[in-house]
Length: 337
Image (cartoon, rainbow, N blue to C red):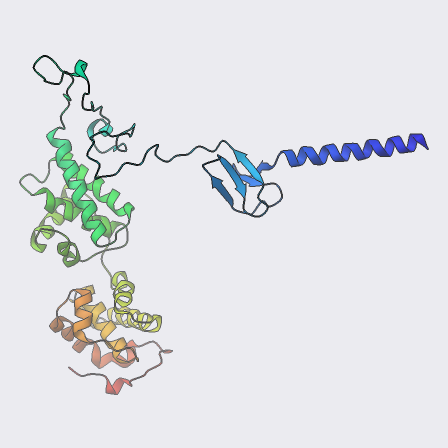
């Protein structure tokens, strides 16, 4: 009996020890990720004040000594003390010479920092080169234009690389850097599959549409690169979204524009004008009607341009609409130009 009790107690103690050991390792690594032992799929809460990672389900601390990547101090732009408490400079920019890594000597304080004439002994000797200054100004201009039309950072980075290549190759001497920057942003949009029209780029730039077009052609020739042809589908979703049209109208307009191209009805017309005319035809056949003026303001084309493309498409309207489209206005009652 004593032997059986000792064996049972020993097994029980081993079980308790195994359980405590398992609970002590409150986390495990799955695909290089710290997770809770009891709730592997639960998100973790990071407590930077205590340096802990806490399970959101049971409150178990699964990690400690979390590094706070935030700044040590808060710096306000209206401070007049002139003392910058930050220990590092701006981020590294590989497009600039030297990676934009530099050392700046702060303002001197105390008698040891000045000579007998009151002149600071330690001064910043390094000046930004003219090349870096031109690049910085161009990058700032590209970033400003991209912010105004809500372009992502990937397009900004591609435009910056294009400008860097053009600037280093010195292929566009005599052209304004702002014009080159605008053309690089236009090319980057085309290459990333989110094209913008010349008028949209011109609206956020200080350069004329004609000058941007000239730089666009020169850059393509200098860099020996190319861009995909613009189609009506590239603009359809954005135009319909800005007009507040439902998905059914957008699908119908896309089908109309594609079918018109296949039937060679609108040959010689720009994709933007064809897209605008297709949106006008689809909206007039639905309950969500939009005028030529509203569509022209969004697409950046004149009312006359929309009417000319619409005139070419109207005789074949019955063949252009998708079969499952629900007409609120029959085809025979559509506006005739």
